[in-house]
Length: 602
Image (tube, rainbow, N blue to C red; front, top):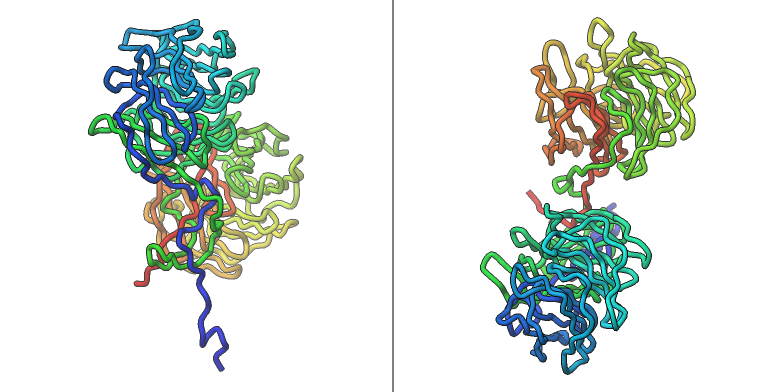
């Protein structure tokens, strides 16, 4: 008899907007009222709903407008028209400093606004253009710029005079600034090369923080040192928008109109910002856009099924492997190839051994590698499995073949029972070290079909693979795994076999024949990357397995082989070292985001 669910079905939640990973991720740009005068390179001040844009490349450069959240009103013009100047304050109490009337005019002028008129007050100590400002009209910062050389000079305004204070770490012009005179953020600019650097002021010193994902100059900025929003910029006018959480930048929804040299809202926030004017491929514009992130939003969670009533589409929230990408991580302390690796994800990993035979072990925290206690037996081309605090190292070359096995407890390596068959360049799993699987490898002479399972104490021989192979890719553990690629003299394989804990079954081939690469994930969600073929080609290809087929994804930044990878899931993996072809210290981190995708029926 059918149950109630079988007869009636089940409810699917209806949502007017897609779920979002965070408040900021749910943000979007919407059109606001146009400026009365199109312009680029204005001095911005204020928030989204109380904004002022001062001067800029518009007519005689004296033009000033204020925004009330819906429309712009022309105000009394400044006394000395300038572009590329700095701004601070509000629509009723603003400050306008530096800039120039032309490329060679590095102005020291400073004017204050009281809501009705502009008054000239104490000049900057150093005249400059392309300057970043932040703060109020009685407590402001003037940061960086061009004098005509690029400068890192910073001056502090106390309502009466400017005082030179600590320079930013990296001199640059055309940088964006936001925040206050005691907690300022600056980002991007020209050094004179294009910059992605971010620096934070804590009222005593400047500290370098996470870089922008997209280097640029002339961007808009809004927010604080812990919650910022950068948008637009040049060269090649950009629409890209990034959100800052105090340490790193994340890309969010783009501007509708790509533009550079625009005005922002330096006293705004990362949930409420304004983009005004700027330069586009079609010329200078008056366009205004308002950024808003919803206070209430549906939290994104993998596996959600819902109906979007706005787009009239049934949707599923899932990991989007096609949107995954590799990013550079911290360099190893010791460059090497033929190493073993373990780790849950790209922010917690361990590498050990490598060639020439070493016992060196390093632990990764998501940004840097730290040397920890060595293996008891130095070796290369070994297998590895587990996490950064509970790992297994087995097999390899000392230089003779070895079956030695060692367990890592987060502090020390301890020797346990050897493998039954000594070998090197074997395939090793990616999950728990107490449920490890070792497959194939070199026996000298000959390529192995041998498979062994580790239970935390000893190794047990299991059913051999259908095809003998050396240095294959292996994802999973001793109960469920997939083995692909590898070298079978005299050729390189595309073959894949899946393991169910008892036997091997041939499955779909990988797209690119190769061996000696890295792997992560499980038997139903695997990731393989890098490697080589016997013609000497070094590969950067990345492929994912969804349980039925392999799909090519974004390449590694650097092709390499004799590497090893780690990651319990195919959405979050790490690759360190390897040969490219010389031994490398490079680390790359793979991340595939969660995305809302329309459900299609074929």
